[in-house]
Image 1 (cartoon, rainbow, N blue to C red):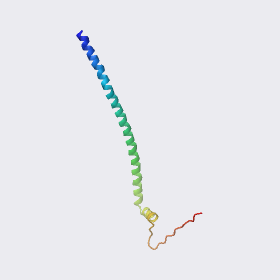
Image 2 (image 1 turned 45 degrees about the horizontal axis):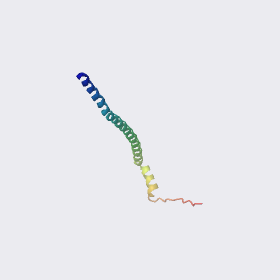
Image 3 (image 1 turned 90 degrees about the vertical axis):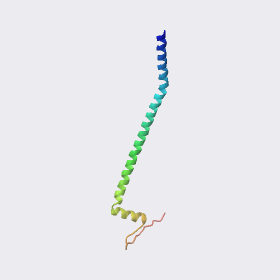
Image 4 (image 1 turned 30 degrees about the vertical axis):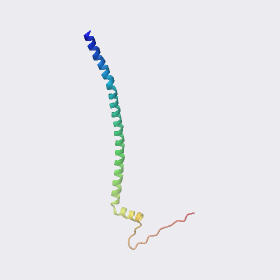
Length: 94
């Protein structure tokens, strides 16, 4: 009779322990899934930032040429060389 009670108690403790740890295990799986999604989002953001960095690097390389600097200064800052006349065409609206 004592052996049956001891076995019953161990089985009962095993079942109780299982039901107590199942929510923690499930929560662990949810946390892992959440972190995997976050990692995927961060990876995509990292790739986008890498592309933007490459584009900006190309722009800097282009501005290092004298022609590009002169074009930027003429178009955006309305500057001119010495003894140079600039003509602007103004269109009338209809």
